[in-house]
Length: 327
Image 1 (cartoon, rainbow, N blue to C red):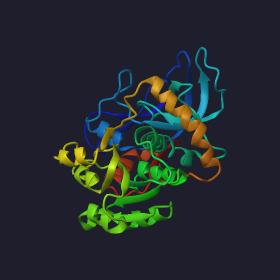
Image 2 (image 1 turned 45 degrees about the horizontal axis):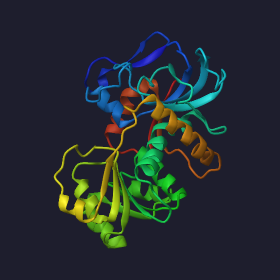
Image 3 (image 1 turned 180 degrees about the vertical axis):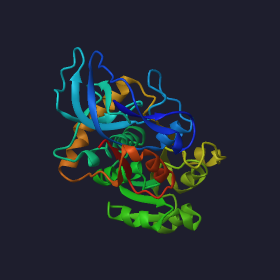
């Protein structure tokens, strides 16, 4: 099979398409013929040598999600049959023509959705679903602030929160991304490139009126998050594009009785990933079929253009997901 190989740590030039042995499914596993996969920040970090993979996952093949057809069944696998259309997340090696996953980690592709569209669902929507409901316990009627609302996870979280009955404020460093986010239901748009975004939030809705924050930026955004949050507000930190360290006022943390939690999917146990996949398959996938949720695709490229795809994502000019497909 063909696979995208990280030949050494470095820039996009270290990526090559090479032949590798086709994997064989183990007990309870299925083998998937991958039709498409999306690109994630973690793939760029892995290419640079800054994101260790979980045990048992090839370190030289990136890719954390997939969509394709069931190609073969391992011993005791009974949930799917050959030819079924499936999608899901994986610890790594998703940027290859074939991969093996536990059958209960896989989810059905919604209706007749195209491979390209479906490839933009797994990582973004599972991450957002888990962060909003399992980490933040978001409730109807609350106000949610999403940083980097134009990202893949950001656009997914925006849609899920709106379906859940929340009011959504979103930040981005691009007026164009904010305008596009409004079409997805964004209530209040905050241009972070214009300076103090927390002051803009306070001017738009009043002080300490945010109930929950989904932070895909990290770094020095933490202090502003605590500033705009109401008493007993919650923060879930999902991404750290602005850095992993920052000083903050613990007095505010205590006075407002705030909760700060972190989350990552890749390093979780098989049991946790199965639980999340089954929950989203039941609650989330049907919403794509009714049109209440939709994948957001910025660009579709061939896997032969993977270097250009990495450069595109690194530019921070994308809205939604960059999808790679096997021709």
